[in-house]
Image 1: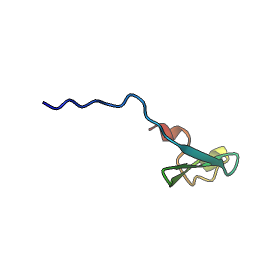
Image 2 (image 1 turned 90 degrees about the horizontal axis):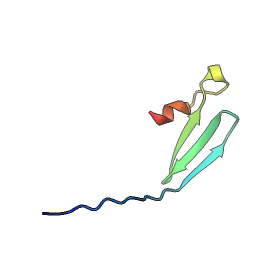
Image 3 (image 1 turned 135 degrees about the vertical axis):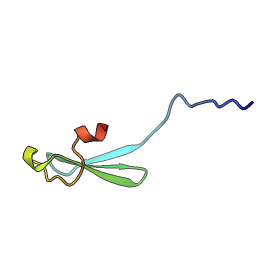
Length: 55
């Protein structure tokens, strides 16, 4: 029988650039995502809202 030992700690590196007061460009592993507020909240709606990133 094989026993799998799970890692209890992981390391990640993330970078964020505040492009405006409502938009942040976030990069992880060379992949970039835009986090932006909807137009109704002063954003440009180019990406997920901060709340939607938790979904």
